[in-house]
Length: 116
Image (cartoon, rainbow, N blue to C red):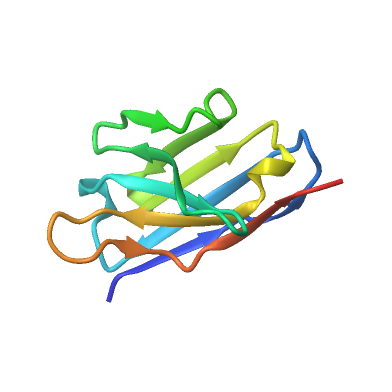
């Protein structure tokens, strides 16, 4: 059974930092693209960042220069380092593994709230 478990969310003040982790089990995450999505209240889910098997990365324009995605294949884990957080970064963040056949794998989501 495949599981993606996010951790590291919480409440942070504007300008602060958080590091999200997504620990995968039941799959060898090293052979997959790994992605982070987020969904704010009343908005559609949006792609935040992705990292491929060669560690090439891509980011949404809204987080470029502030967020960094990375992976530790030995730990089967992907990370999202979030710096200079803004209130508009408030959302539920989801870890995602896209699949060519079958439904994508998704984590349960973790809340990030940026507020003073």
